[in-house]
Length: 103
Image (tube, rainbow, N blue to C red; front, side, top):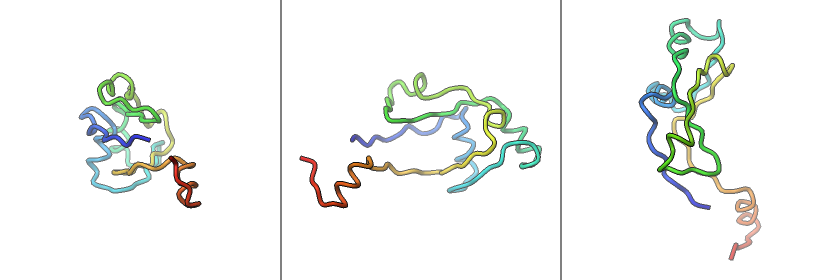
């Protein structure tokens, strides 16, 4: 497994907006009545949303890992984590717990 550094969020992204809150972790209700109307309106602006899965290619990140999104129209809630650490594959964790070495 390769652990890679992820580029900082784009200025035109929801990720940047969420980082700007200063919260480490949050849960945000996005449909009407669950948020102040001013907040909901601000989030209605279409922005980029980054998707990072198993394969991450920093050189082509904008093309491969971003899409236009309108979160209040697409999601009921959003859970945010301001900083994540990589995780090991399940089989690696099981092998380590059992004292098995991957040679």
